Structures are given as structure tokens and as C-alpha cells.
Length: 111
Image (cartoon, rainbow, N blue to C red; front, side, top):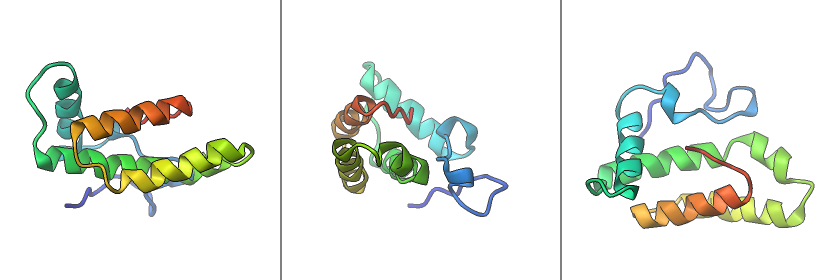
């Protein structure tokens, strides 16, 4: 599964920044909204929705701007690398939730 970003840029990281799901069209916004509904007692996410959210989070956390933000602090830099690594294996809504809580601990909020 692939996310096709609707953007006028040649890179998924214009100016080193991540793309934001609310600015996209297609299946990604619906997948994120389904994930949020799942977390608040709505219907469970489908595997395809989980995969789209995972792809989005992997794109988001790998933006170059976070490297620059976390670089001065070794612990933050290590936590960022762990988030980047772990984004590749997210497979459940609970796993995404736990990953998001770790990102929030660093002050990073992709949703």
C-alpha cells in the first residue's frame, strides 16, 4: 500500500517539514479519522486503515526537521530514532496509540 501525496513539491518533505494528513485527499484522512473513532469507542479500524496510518506516521516522523530539533539532546535523539524504527512495524490501533504517546512525550504531535 502506498500513500500518494497531493503536493506541489518534489519531495515529501518540503522545507524539511512533514506533510499533514488533514491537507491530503483520498483514503488517508478517512483512515486517520477511523483510527480516532476507534480510540473513542467507535468501530475498529480495518487492517488497510491501520496500514495507511502507519505509512503516514512513518513519513511524518522521518521528516528532517525532527532530527535538527532533537539533535542537541542525546536522549531525545535516541528516542526519535526509536520512534522512526518502530513506526515501520506498527500493526494495531493499540500499537499506534502507544507510539503516539511516546511521540507526545517528545513534544511531537502528528495528529
